[in-house]
Image (tube, rainbow, N blue to C red; front, side, top):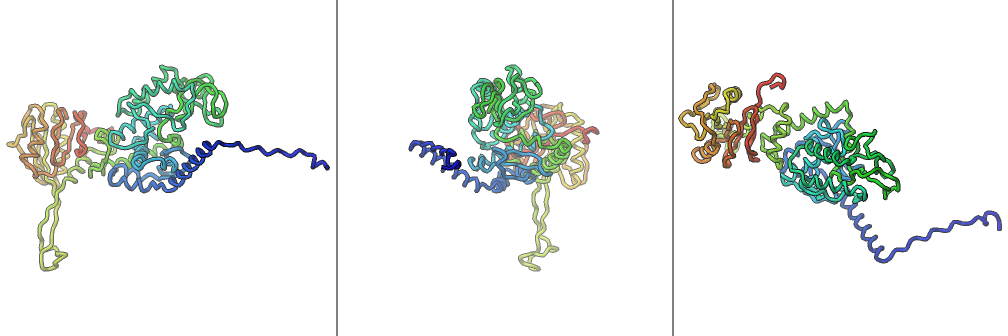
Length: 503
């Protein structure tokens, strides 16, 4: 036997034997994975974006300015600024596990992040908590509007579900339970900043670390001193949601982690790409957001295309973008979409069906508008003068019927505001306020007469019955409507002239 033959040959490892039950379970798991992969190949996000055109015009207009990119680099979905354009990254494997309504909800959720400027100016220092806070704020709005979202999403007033990876170290369960109790106690429709401050205060009061620098190949863990990066106090570091802060030994890598932080209380989507927006490009990115959203707000007000966005959020968006959307523009848009069509015969126009036999048709567009001025003492003369200045401009192309009211409509002092004419502001009454007096007057006594109704007020009255005609609430500066206006109604918040604000 030569030397080569004397070398001991390696013994092949014996494959572990599976029980019939384990084999069946493995076959089922493989079949499920294969089915999921096949379903992922068929997911067409463009189909879902096009579907927004009918039901969600506002979201659809924003969506047109966002590139959609399928990738497995994110576990679910996320938005960022990439290659000089807004980009939505989405995982086909994740979308394949969702129903059509849930996919639409995820898309709207991502669009909200851009509209509410979460990726630029409104970012907060603690990335982990800011992620949770923004999702709580957005999901609260979506659910109120009737949007369907995946069940594991974070909602204020509802206990969070299990994390996506299903892995929560024993040492983190106490902290998670406390935070879950806090989220379950939260009210709905608060701002991201409100939720952020509440969670940060909770973490400080309970000495719970909120961030975890990477310490091993699995990406879990944090420093042994229980502090965040660079020796920061709990709740002050930088990181990403679901980093897996825990104490003891990590079951995934076998290494020691820090003590008792949050793990697995993570948002629905991936916010890690927000940090990819270069600091020197943030101003340009925000200007792009202002332009896109301002145009969408204008179009939504013109065509009542707000979709499922609650009226309270519509008002917030107008206020948020008020330096881009002038109240005068909103007023003109309302008057413009209240126009009716008139049809008259004209021998100067050729009849397309019977040329030179019958006269052609001449169409005109007019807006029969009624303006009601609240005469309560809290509506000052300055506000009335400010509105009359803009109405004088509108009167160059149309006519108005001008009424004064308090607890009743003053018909005797009605003014016919002729086209091209000017009307001086004045006061005929000084009583209380009753909006039902105006609505009843338009619905019953002037039924079908007007194409649109505008009410100038300080908002200090209860909500009236629904108006059968297009209705715009014009609220004087520094006041607000005392109730949430209906979806089909328009709210115009006037602002005082200000050189600083450019109005």
